[in-house]
Amino acid sequence: MRSDRRTIGWLLAALSATVLVLSAWQLTGAARLYLDTAFILLAPGWAVVAHLRLATQSLEWLVAIAVGLSGTLLLAELMTALHWWHPWEAFAVLAGATLFELLRQLTAPRRAGSSR
Image 1 (spheres, one colour):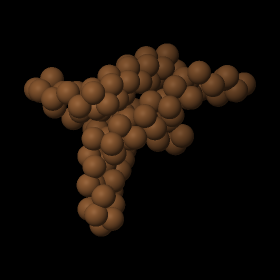
Image 2 (image 1 turned 60 degrees about the vertical axis):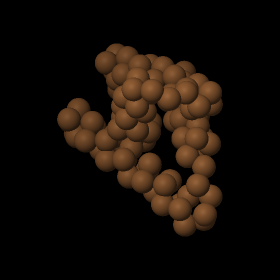
Image 3 (image 1 turned 45 degrees about the horizontal axis):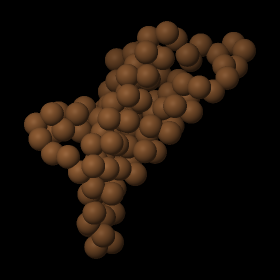
Image 4 (image 1 turned 90 degrees about the vertical axis):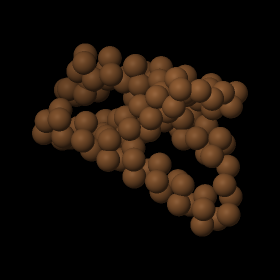
């Protein structure tokens, strides 16, 4: 994994941990809105993009944003369809799963010949 990708991964892991704590404590406010928006746009998708071999960094960011938005919308659709509307809990699960995957990628032993 390149150095810049690792730095981004650690920053998004910190963002994921922050929104997980804020969600668990059910804190609200303007800062929470901005942090949640940044999390949804970037972190879940970045956790998925690391498994793909995309040609350019701009394509990685576009796919990360698309996956983050579509995954969150899918989660909301499932909650609506199942009549289980618990956004605090769902957001905490999403943040926890994202944090877990980012930390797994960042702490996994590197394979020989791997550039990611």
